[in-house]
Length: 191
Image 1 (cartoon, helix red, strand yellow):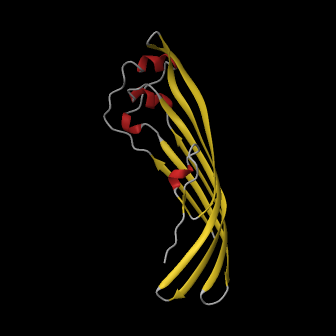
Image 2 (cartoon, one colour):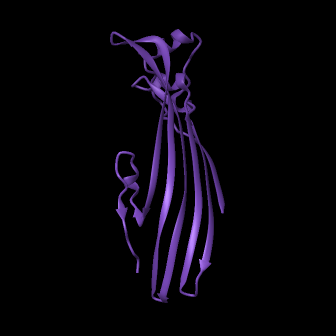
Image 3 (cartoon, one colour):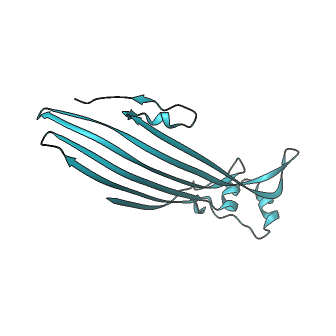
């Protein structure tokens, strides 16, 4: 099975905002021809692209028992872009950012199912999964000189990468997947 999802969103902005009078001269010092668009016309958008694939092999031992082995891969990408000059003209904190997020997970899962009768089902198994997530942003801000913004707009870039690995039988608690916490094992049996 393979699934693909692509989406593009235009992020709505508030109409009728007044231009920040402290920021406009700083922007025009960099580009003397700059004239901000109306606040509702600021171009901010987000694009997302996600894929998921799952390959399953099932073996029926008899009418009451079966094994299932599955491999999976998830991939996700999101890109938020902004119009830095026009966004900075309206924002009170004098900064805005572009952001890119990527993540992928791959793993395998083994399940055993036993149906002792039509009223009951027992299922158990384990899953091994690896996740890699990255978050990058480009910050648009102004340099600060003795408490006042200068006319130099700066572009700062930063990256954050996070790796996660889980290999435990039972049910994994998603909260346990934070990098500084050990994996929580919550074994369970549904009857």
